[in-house]
Image (cartoon, one colour):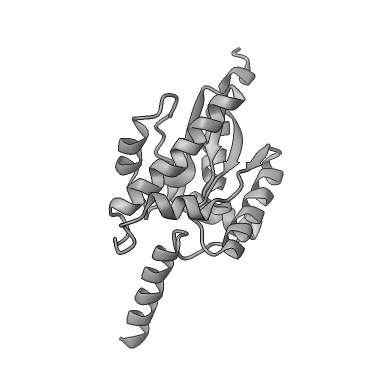
Length: 189
């Protein structure tokens, strides 16, 4: 049998709920995930902390290591400058994916972990093909569409079982703005 320490993988974690089914799948496939909470896009800071606390609860549940990357929202804002008005799934999102994956690739290399991937692909609101297109520039990225094998629904079930906070916007102030406009439109109907 293969030594599981050779199958360590750094898992970029966007939030606790998305990490649940992703971790479960990685473990079932023989990987030992090290969780990496690196989300400088999340706004406001209190939301960043709330999402981290839920990711930490998931890490504890599975007995896994979690690394919290210091948030640098100003650097992220600089990276997406000029794309503040983009709608969800536009160029800003691809830039954001690149920002988070570049950071994850850097940390994976520094830790001597050859493979990394992201929980972003579990969300039915994220296009895995877009994430994979951005990730092709990063050696060591393992393409896993966590939506497959009923991953999104499984993440909802596990989130409820663990009592996790499930946010209703992607994370940045621009996705929050768009969500607030959607809610206002729904209310006006």
